[in-house]
Image (tube, rainbow, N blue to C red; front, top):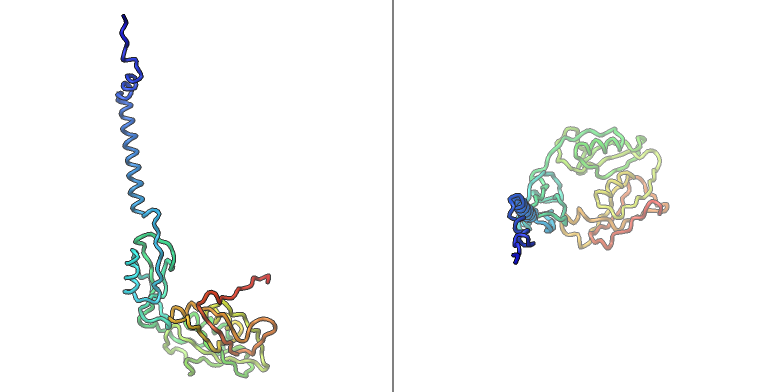
Length: 278
């Protein structure tokens, strides 16, 4: 009677295959590769905080110490990147940040801060008398100064600077003055009563509206803020939702005339800006 050869059974064949040193080595390498790959993914997931995102808080208007506390509480770091001087901010306050408030970042992200300088930088007053208004504006801005009120007087040199003034007094060339100071210009209005259209200022901040007004040789009149404008940061962000006189139609003003504006930060009052076709 013949006996059954156990070496020919499927189990025996598989055992023989898996006991072969080449197969064993391949299996070991495959397992090692799997664990190395899995471990790498776990480490990367932990290191990059995969799927986690933090919202950047708004620290503008705060001191560096206050901003640091707020950012550390949100598991973020901060770094001072620059300083500027803005009269409407208190010395040492944060005036700008990058990334912006509301941005999504990873834990321990560096937030770069710009602060208001403790002492204002000074520049020398240039001479813009006898220059055209446009030349004078460019010269003042190149020195870090701002064009203030445009005062028109009868004179044949239309839109040419007759006097340069600071706080109601004539200012001489070379006088040291705080960077960002406002310089008023006395301009000739020609021998006729020059008229200019009333521009649309709605939806613009004061800074943006000031640039528009100067293009039309006009000035700000009364500036009225809503009750929601409380801090200096609010006043910077506030936009114009009403103006007098209104723009459009055939509205015209004499050069140098004032335009009254109302400002708010209430987005519900923001006017719709028509497109070019409209």
